Length: 255
Ligand code: ADP
Ligand code: MG
Image 1 (cartoon, rainbow, N blue to C red):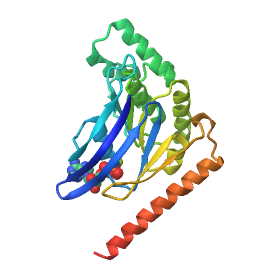
Image 2: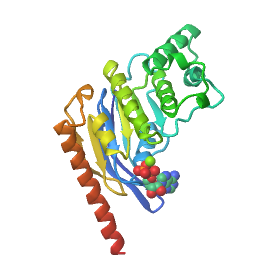
Image 3: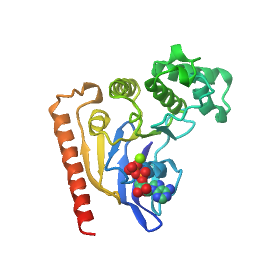
Image 4: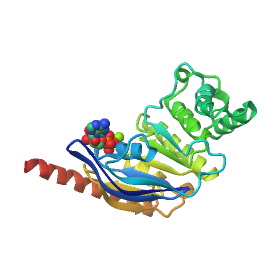
């Protein structure tokens, strides 16, 4: 299933937050969204997930969700959003509970997603007993458990230290390489975007408009930091961010 964002505009009161966002999110791709703080990235993700409605425009689901999909759109948040009193397995089971699956099917799904996120040995641990990186892997396992069509990831690595971030990027690439998933991946980290994105959508300062879409051809599993395509893409993203910051400064001087 693809997603199509069609002419999304949004204002909170008199504050225009997003302007004319049209974008395709093809199945099997990770589409990164980058842009200055406050430009409307998280707001856009809420519209995609249907948590809020934009003032104008629509989010269209094109095609059918994957086989066995229980919930087409699932979130992964920066702060993990785990239930502290439930074990790793219990947190994943919580996402499946509303779907009333047979016990054996539920157990099989949980075993599969815990294996894919390298958490099998930690199934009985509580969130407080595991590291930040593992907590985020639990949140990813929970999101994958419902076989979503699209995962909506809002700064999923931003609460983690830089080494953990690197390792989790490797994990995400390995996960995607084994079973490609579709994601809209919001980040303010440009290196992360070029490492993980098939397509990187650059939003302007608020109201967020699409400034540019940077596509990266190098397959996810083959990306290296010294890959000229990645260096060129990251340089371009930095240039766009500097332009936005300079334009914001110039606006401040003229009010
Ligand atoms: P980002 O994730 O890119 O940093 P957000 O999407 O969180 O930006 O916010 C975009 C803008 O919309 C900000 O100026 C923020 O203050 C404003 N905003 C976000 N949510 C609300 C809300 N519920 N009511 C009013 N303003 C909001
Ligand atoms: Mg945000």
